[in-house]
Length: 490
Length: 97
Image 1: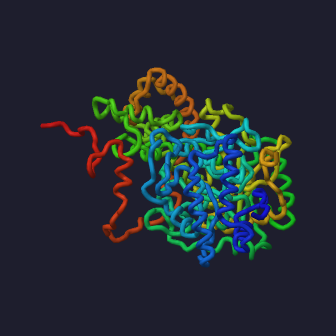
Image 2 (image 1 turned 120 degrees about the vertical axis):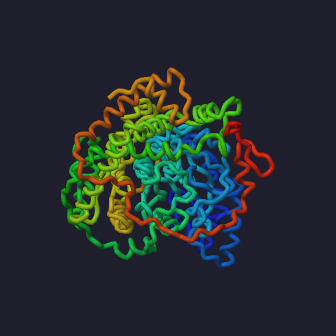
Image 3 (image 1 turned 30 degrees about the vertical axis):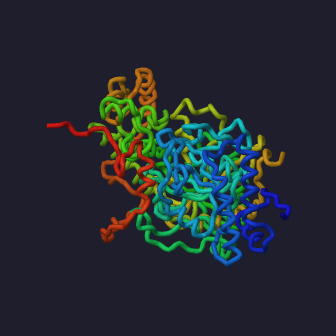
């Protein structure tokens, strides 16, 4: 086998090596599985590793390559967040209520990846039902940040971000309801994209808050992220919110339009208030650099301060309804000793759900209940309109918006988990993007003095995912950072 | 705004969640704090604003109501807490007349 250093690889480089027969998919998958054996006991990114399945798929990919099969990801190992269904593998959502659930079918995104020859190493950890910002709400165990094992990787797609950062697979899919791809990407020093609402089918994604949920890719760099989006995007009649639009060739677009300059908006509300000075500094440096080529403009998104309250009414309201299906009847955990049907429902859900999920079901049920619907759910839905209008106005003036991803670098495990409101407030910069259904990306722009990753968020208007990727690509090329956690170097 | 333990238990019943007394007490104080924070929305005048329930205004897509066979029935039955032949066994839901 050729000497391959995983930290030097990206999906595109690996494809080149596979094409030139410098490496086989079997070797690549072996290397990835070794990486999991070495590092996963420390970071705990995986809930399930499908060693046998991955090896078999790799063998098949090698055979197909010899026959000239044109798969765009033929032989590339990936990981998948454990709320996305892969037929025959567990899909637990990191919840005890789905502990023994085996997916009977593939999500549309999985079908698409399989068709292009991708290989699935396993399912990654998350906050239970994607509810959380640190992966500490997993019903099984927390995931650790590879840049500092005492810190959280962010959430809810913490496992996917960590797997990508540790090269346990060359990329991943996560889901983003209020920042669940972008915030862990920022905390772990990888690229994470939330596509426009409707751009990627959610068929086979376990629903949390249906008007906000979106599947998206994690990549080591922007090119890989663009390639993954290319494959998973597109209309699907099995998801009625999927938009009937043919996605452009993202990879080609970002390369061919490398010299495009943009009008970039800096929303003043995102730069005021309590932001870690090292994050502010990193963004200021980036803005200086961007000014050489792009037009920078201060803008205002005046309803930003209402976004967290709006989100934490709407998302739990939708969740309380979506999660009503976990009642012990058709699948998942059932409390067997119950004497009445009511007792079965209540005990099944009491034992099956964790604290944060129950908290949100309670909040959501309250916000939708008679007498409170108008004051909470309806009010929040109206404020959502105002938040969306802010963006519509902003995009009349600028092409793209640049912001921090998080107010702080990764925090310590246990630091916020006992104060739900503090945890909710850490999502302030990512939530408005979901409320408005916009595309948003998080890319690494530097490290703090303590060697913790810092991310920047680029937001675009509806279905302008390619512009978001394009600016991200330009920044990535200019900064030319190599984000490899020290853990992997030792 | 405060949420009493009684109200917490009422909501828990609506949500079909069994809570211990200790949990109900904890949720009462936690949810009160969160609802207080939500109150900031009341500062905004939204009288003339229509609500948004979906981020994109897409008309409901219609398609033919065609039956497609699903061949993986066994796989679905395997996930059932209790199955008998090709049926899922559930507790009695209806009362005898």
